[in-house]
Amino acid sequence: MDTKLTHVLLPFEDSSGGNVQIEDFLISPGDKLALAGYPEERLYFVQEGHGALSVYGEIGKGDMYILRPDIALYFTPGLLHEIVNTGNDPIRLILFRVTGGLVPAGAMEGVQKWTSIGQSAEVGCGFWYTDIFNLQENETAREGLDLQLWGIGTRRAQELEFAELLTEAPGGAIRLHAHGNTHEHYYIIQGQGTIYIGNQVIPVKAGSVATVPVNEVHHLENTGSTPLMWIDINVKAE
Image (cartoon, rainbow, N blue to C red; front, side, top):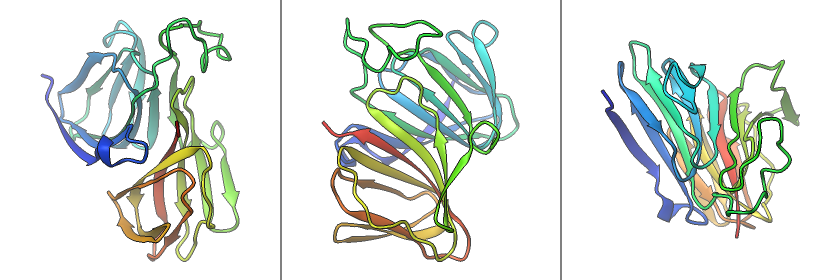
């Protein structure tokens, strides 16, 4: 079987820059995301469920990895991959799709610094598998007493500049700031808070999304009684 359910949380046309879409993506038990190479950069965050991932070929023929909650998976455009649900519950993936990232033919930008697994002029074929809570391999950074940051690896990223998972303590707040060369996109995993974007005041909770244009001053506050956790990605402003 190959049946899936996708709920678009942020469509391309509503995102800052117009080239990011955020989806809540379900794969039912026994089903799969069939082997394919998609034309956009993809960042998956495994929120629920268990399964198997195969890169370059089908399960048994490609490089295989185990999926479980709190793992992030990054793919450059065109890289073949397959995800199979091996559990008894749906796999819930938060999917960030970023268009415009295909490396032009003959160019090596974004590829040349990664040489251990070869190079491709057409597709930056790097794959990054990140267990965001494995602190031995992925250390946290702190900003003051309230905010913790985990970097999400994005090998050979093209339009996607960087990705992070952040946790803010109750009563905490990110300082007021702006990004001079990227658009920022949020997906809230748990908790509740308020995002201030210019003159906008946007309440958020688990499942909320928000998008911040380049150079727009913004900050986020945790207004709840539990930690506020979210993923954000920053995408190049053209």
